[in-house]
Amino acid sequence: MSIEKEIVGLIPAGGQATRLSLLPCSKELFPIGWQKDEMGEKRAKVVSHFLLDRYKAAGIRKTYIILRKGKWDIPQYFGDGTMVGMDLAYLIMNLPHGHPFTLDQALPFTKHNLVAFGYPDVLVEPEDAFCHLIRKQSESNASVVLGIFPIRADQRWKDILAFGEDRKIKTIALKDRASADQLWGWAIALWTSEFSLFMHEFLMEKAKQNRFTDPDGKEFTMNHVLQAALDNGVPMEHVVFNSGFVHDVGTPDDLLAAQRQLLGSS
Image (tube, rainbow, N blue to C red):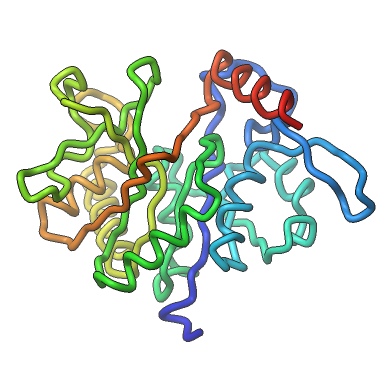
């Protein structure tokens, strides 16, 4: 596989888990399930390991985990990636202003690659979800392919989408989710070097203006970048996982629910 077509995974790990309050470890290492080691012994499985498994299922063999200073327990736990059967490398974030700035730290290492992206505290099914995104990108040559999932009314999910009459994505994050006929949200993505460079230029322009928050005073999110890409005509496609699901474990209640489900079924 040429460098232009090699797919690398990205995992942002720069947050401070403010929604979970004080934890004894980085939130990416919180155990919520079980796995068997090479000896067949059962041991705890941490939340970010599930995303690495999804990358691995799609044939992705290299992932960059982007840290903020102090989260040294993550490289101490995963090491070089042998335990997950992947090559892992670690980058240090420089601009602590939200996920897009964190992800942009990887540009020198990924600007010629396809990039797979997911959140380390969001569980996704099906297991082969990224395989579908890779296939869609190959067929469409889109710069971005989003993985879209049904969202329950009781889920605290901000990334609710709106579609145009042509069934293309029109709005990345609805302000009023009550206006949607059916709730669909994106949770994973695959993008090309075109989008990586678009995101970098978008963020550097904000940094040049010393603007690190949106008009509401909140940090920029991937929704802001994706909406800007749409507005600027960056080709974007999507895959709908009608029977799939997403589960955010970034709050205490959601974390406990995931633990009950995964630990109880192991």
